Image 1 (cartoon, rainbow, N blue to C red):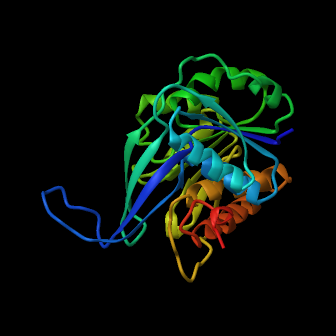
Image 2 (image 1 turned 135 degrees about the vertical axis):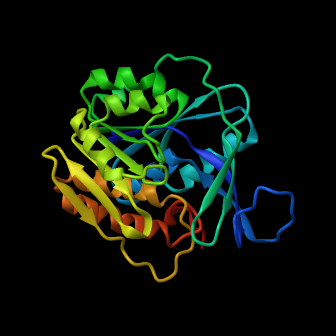
Length: 284
C-alpha cells in the first residue's frame, strides 16, 4: 500500500522554448525548440517520489481521448502507480512558452471536468494506510479536501503562485498541515508563511528559484536553504514539484525541517537536468 497519495493533475504538454517570452503585441518570432512531454503538478510530484523509492499512488482525472492513453503510458513507463478517474471529453493539455531564464507562460488548452463529486472508489482504502496525502490545486482535489481531512492523514498542498487573496486556494490552506508555494505573486512571502503557520499549518515553505527556499515551522522558527548548483540547467519545469517531493520523502524518514529543505533542494536540482518533469522519463 502507498505511503503517499497524490491527488491532482497529469497533463500532456507542448513545451516551446523561446529567446524571450512574447510581447503582448502582434508579432512573429522563431522558437529555439519544442517538445511534447508529460506535465501536471501532481504527475511531477508522483514521479519524483517514485524516483526516491517512496511507495506512491497518483490519483488523477483523464478524458476519453487518445491523450489519456499517452499520459497513462508515460506514467506507467516511469513506474508510477496510477488510479485514473475517467470522464467524458478531453484530457488535460497545456502549451508552455518558456523563456531562457526559466520564465513560463502556461496556456491551458483542455481541462477535464469530473462527472461527479463523489470520492473515487478505493481512495478511502488507500488513505487508510497512507502517511501523507498531497492535494494539488484542481476541482477534483478541492472536492476531496473535506473527506481527506476527516481521515487524519496529514494533508500536504502546493498553492503555487498564490497571491494571498484567491478564494479557490482557501480550502487547501485551511486543511493542510504542510503548505508549499512560490514567491511569484507575493511581495513578502515570509509574512505569508508566518500567517499560514499561525492559522494552523505545521510547516509552510516558499521556494525562491535560484535563491533556494525558506520555511517557517510550528514554533515560528525560520529555516533557509540555498539552491543546489546545476552546471547545465536543461529545463525548469517540475523543479518545484521535485522540491516538495524531496522534502516530503525526507520528512517521512524522520528529518527535521532543515534537513528536509536540503533534501528538497537536491531533488529540485535533479529535475533541472532533464527536459522532462523527471529523469525517469528520459529515454536512452
